[in-house]
Image 1 (tube, helix red, strand yellow):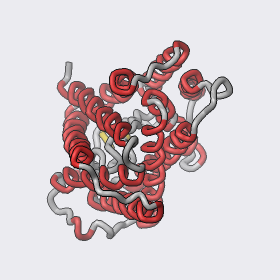
Image 2 (cartoon, one colour):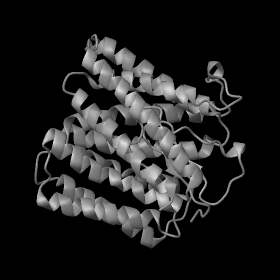
Image 3 (cartoon, one colour):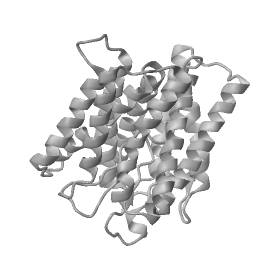
Length: 329
């Protein structure tokens, strides 16, 4: 088994650990505090991994300012939505809805970028959507705000990913991470003040926040190592392992046990998703709730190295890394 596959597998496991911790923090902290501090601590490994020649003091300088700020806004909205979802609904349900993002990415790519998508791929995406319906079961139960915000997270995450595809090769990593993180920090800091949810962190809460930063930073390094040494076609299916981790962590730590039909839906989501990312006529995209509320795997600028098949493109915000293959359609 390639070492990159193991790196990717464990990085996704660590990302899922971060999400499980975030769910636990939701009982005592507001979503704004969680988003603010996890983003703040996630900047530490991002800054330490700054490529030579980049300057964080000039992170605000961009070649595509409007697109960069659009990505930051969509990332901020998606970020707060998924954190709320994690803290209010079952982990497995939140993950199953989050994987709707590739559907929205395809729709946006068709409508905005003019890409052509074959019927086979639409059928696989439709199967994924059907699996999500079996998990969530709208009409058969009362849905919560967390379910709706998970859909919003997938939608805005798709926008974040599509915009990233347009600007990643032209912007420095410090700009991609710095601007998006600044938006999250300013927005959530303001909301903390406006809602009166500013409070001193207890020692154990601070410890968990630092743990998220450390685990997330380690996962980022492992994910970067994976994408640098292994083809995207071998890494892409591993994103769906997060659903299995969600089932495990949800059951062990939060006593969350989906109904039997939900397991069928989750299986459909995983199988259809894997078939989709391995489809020979489709881009290989990795979209999942990766980094803890902010600075995820650092972007590898296409301009810094010669592009080859399965070149990875990692999204550093809103948990939406994308790996793109050489074939466009």
